[in-house]
Image (tube, rainbow, N blue to C red):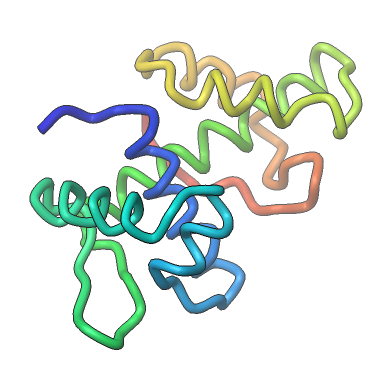
Length: 136
C-alpha cells in the first residue's frame, strides 16, 4: 500500500495524542479528525497492513517502530517549518500551522536538512514544543 497524506495525518495524530498522554482510540481519532468510527476502523486496517500501527481489542492504538519513525519525521518536519517561517520569514506563530501542514509532506530530505542547518540553535517550535532530532 502507498503512503498518502491521509495516512500521514492518522500517524501524526496518534503520535501527538500519545505525546500529550492521551489514550488513542478509534473514537478519539474520529472526533479529532472529524470522521466516522467506521472510517477510522478502515484506515486502521490499512495502517496495520502497512506495519505502522498495532491494535488489540479494548487496548489503545499504538504505533509500531516503523510507524513511530514515520510520525517522528512528520512532526519534526512540521515543527521545523513552523520555526523557519517564524524565525526567517517573520510570520507570526498563529500564521504558520496551515503552511506547515502542507510542507510536512514534501519528500525532499535536502530541503529539511537545510532548514535544520539554518535553525541549528532552535530546539523548540514557536508553540513551545520540542523539535524531534531526525537525520533527514
